[in-house]
Image (cartoon, rainbow, N blue to C red):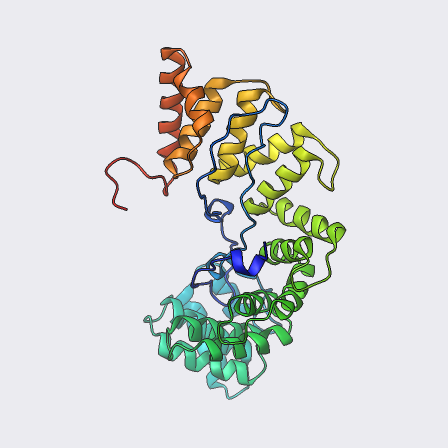
Length: 358
């Protein structure tokens, strides 16, 4: 199956130009379509078809942290410490001094875009970002790309977004390179072109952007738009998984359990599934439940298996075999599993509960 035909990438609302905190791994959720029900094979509890690889949408791009530019000490220091009024005053002082100060202009754009220390004003933010971009600031170019794509502070335009992302990426902004690659995947603002997508994913992946590592890994594995390269694909997949990219952890766990391109290690696979399951991934919860039910890579524990299955089921991922595991538990163990699932669900915001609106 060609990757491009299997993807549905959502419209984005990505992070600010220089946010400091990456997105929590729990917010990176893979889609969880129903798994075809098959009796579990104790020799291979993961025998049901794996879900097709999913590339992250633009909404899932972790903001790219940027070190304070030279000369931006007081303004950026105040911003990073949460003293936004002081940051605005210091940045405005530098701009009014008449110097071409792209760092101060970008900071003012950020403050107005967020309403931090100044009134929320996207239009004014865009004006400051444009002035900074004219001075060559890649963060400002990236921010303008986001504003063009979302229609915040300026007219919505995929074409303008792609142009800004390309300028920022050419200037070394890895987040912009990743976003531009996704636009080429979608054919938004640029022609649909998988080789071009891969070309822009590559510098972001090499810089350690986990989403880009996973995206390029999938293309290299499939040979989609690039020459197939399983060795590099697995290296990138491992790199993304080490950064808590949940979908990459699931894909790596499947490969590790099956010994597909990597050394077979059921315990390591189970650990990866559990980590992704704890992050809220329904596919990982389902696969970990199957391993627990069969005692593969982990000690057999049908009660825990039932609890993980019920949690995945709350996310819409059904499994007839695991339904039978729940049904055949002694009443006390079934009650315990249901209580565990409810307890875990209480801390998970996207769980579907009875009575919730669709």
